[in-house]
Amino acid sequence: MMRGFGEVGNGDQAVRWFKERLKVYPLATGPREGTVTNASGKGANTLPPEDGSAFTMLNEIIQYEPSELFNKEQLGRLATLGIEKGKPFNPDNRMKRIFDQAAKQGVAMSRAILYASREPEINYWPDRHWEKMFVRNTEFLRNGSRDIDARTLWHYQAIVVSPNLLSTIPGRGTSYLTAFRDKDGAYLDGAKRYRLRVPAKPPVKRFWAVTAYDPMSRSLLDSGGNITVGSLGKPEVNPDGSVDIYFGPKAPKGKEKNWIKTVPEKGFFVVFRFYGPLEGYIQKTWVLNDFEPF
Image 1 (cartoon, rainbow, N blue to C red):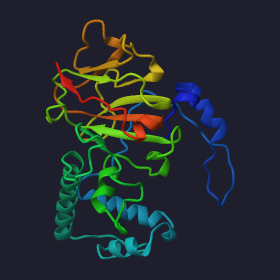
Image 2 (image 1 turned 30 degrees about the vertical axis):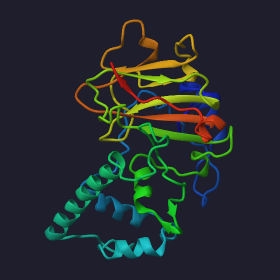
Image 3 (image 1 turned 45 degrees about the vertical axis):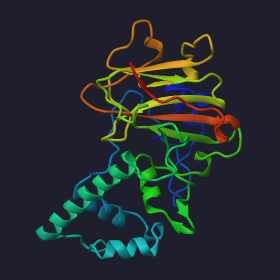
Image 4 (image 1 turned 90 degrees about the horizontal axis):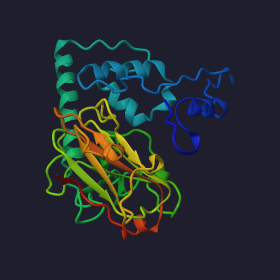
């Protein structure tokens, strides 16, 4: 699944762009004509299971994929659970209960790491509630060792890793920040109304965008309305150059273009994306405001 935006375009325009440039095929058979489908507006569940059936899925992956795809540590850990290529995976009732409890406990731990981080360096600006998606680097290294919690922080809410996702070169790559709380430290509530004021001259070479997500699925918020406001959409701009973005179940009168619709029955969080971040972001001289209830 590919996402089209910016120079690529949207909808059928993006489909044509990828159809002309993207080729996916098995190396064993060589190039072949692919099928490209416009998935705009179509629902899709891409989430892995969060109960014991996750281990059944792991076994299916091990049986299907070549063993070279996994390192010896991964294969060894799975083997202790009875998951080995070419062998049946038949856990008894006792093991099924253990797998189910382990999966659910792992999900709870991941949510705590993401939504209630104890990482001292988690805030991008010390006096704001905007949090880093990568705590230190995209290799999840700290003092020469693998930081497991930092890896979980990223991978429970995202998938692909690239050095370009943590840009330190002005105008190159991207940088992402998340916000789970308002200016008072309270979690964002879909039943309430908020204003996010984006200061004038956001330091980006290409464009910026803020998008709402569902905390349970970590997927796009299914609110039945607009969930993204960004510079490409040409939002209304204040006389001083700032942009006010509004969040809530209903749009403030006359602010529909700058409004993101939320769901009253659930919370939400947002990702603020900087495409081609410039010195003001990298050096932290430009500061993004917190969510303000109103």
